[in-house]
Length: 152
Image (cartoon, one colour):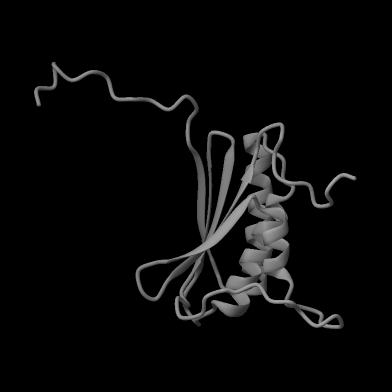
């Protein structure tokens, strides 16, 4: 098609903001993911709750269950409209997350239940082998995401 006969390219009403980094699959890398995500959200003028908790859980899971020595995990945040999408990609595509009820006296095992409670939506997408991406979405508008404790 002739360049002159084509109209202008469509534009989004608001720009797509994104932030991506690779981190070591260590507890320090998981902490950095949460801290840097919180700082990026502050820079964008967005609330850090509940996103910082979701990032912390997904990063901790990548480090604990998705760790392969010598392979980093990736954190990606992007905002489209009034939705923040959080993605954590690791290199253990063979180990898909599944929320489970932890024993009452267990000290771990509730991370995905927390993500499920805090996020508007979440899921897992297989990537190019050997990767997988666990994602969560939260609203950033005035109605935001669901409250941690429903109102009575």
